[in-house]
Length: 472
Image 1 (cartoon, rainbow, N blue to C red):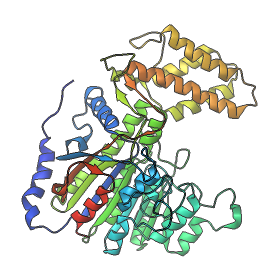
Image 2 (cartoon, rainbow, N blue to C red):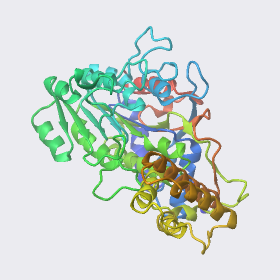
Image 3 (cartoon, rainbow, N blue to C red):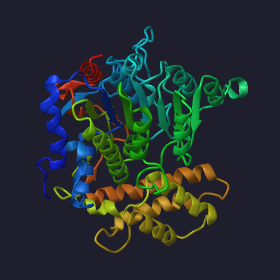
Image 4 (tube, rainbow, N blue to C red):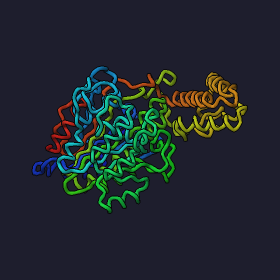
């Protein structure tokens, strides 16, 4: 594989003006913090290798070219392998907390405040963006204070108290309260409108609300995937909003002479890695990289005033490039055969079952060939053992009665998982877990304040670095 050791000329032109003029400048005025949820160095490297060797993309994962790179530890206050709530709180406040906790100390006796509030209180604008729901753990860590990350309605109420300028996501999980609360609570949309918030599901709506002088704008994508998220990049149609689109619109909203802070989360990297779905995870990392490229476009206009940090809250899945089945060989071209996420494949397999509960194994193989490239012929042909694995999963699905839809959805998911596992193995991708791991995560830094890096970091160091760079 061809390796890229030199920075592209355009990136050099971005970097050096800031280095030359930094001596006479005040702190960073514009700060971007990108968080790839579940994105370890393995996921980043897999995306880079895939972009280089399969897509022949000359840019690849652009942030791997940043001039400052290090690692950060991620442990929580009460467990070495962290969760997104505890890690998000560390990244947003600079303090460790316990598993499942947002914006509170480990025993919930003290409130922890996000660095975003420092920017807000200093007259700078704030944007919080994510590819999942806006009340999910990572975005919530920048505005909420909750003993449980699952208190979605309470978290949404905290969003309405935060007074930031732009929120962009797939939507809210419980805008009308939890199942237990039912109709006893007011809708987040009703309460937010009363508080002066503007809600919209279109970019033209964002523009209109901005023109009307609405201080806090909440954008939710109009065609959200299940659980109020943006579509997976591998499933996304050109008409669907991408994380890069969202980043570009957020800059339009919050750009102003006083500066801004923007947190952008690639939240579905984690979801794909929980599924051990390498192709989908790689596409999610590339989607995050394209969002970073939007920030780099902004950086080119303000090179001595902008700081960009790309990191992760934790690694998910224990991903490896190389496995026992393939030894030293990687065949990432196999992943290019996959055209759907595990979630989408599960839905399509379930749809086939619901329309024809007794469809043949060959019918299912036809679907798997069309969607993830598994077939009995070609360079990545199924072995007899692999075919038997898929046939056993098929039988568990078709042996269900027509009314057993819940079990059918589960078994369709198992069949999808087995198929993707086979494809991963053929590509040379390994996994150790369907959960998080305790590995340190990468940190990539570019721009104003990057020279302050002390070396190996803890996740609590990152918000402190941001505040120091911004002189807040």
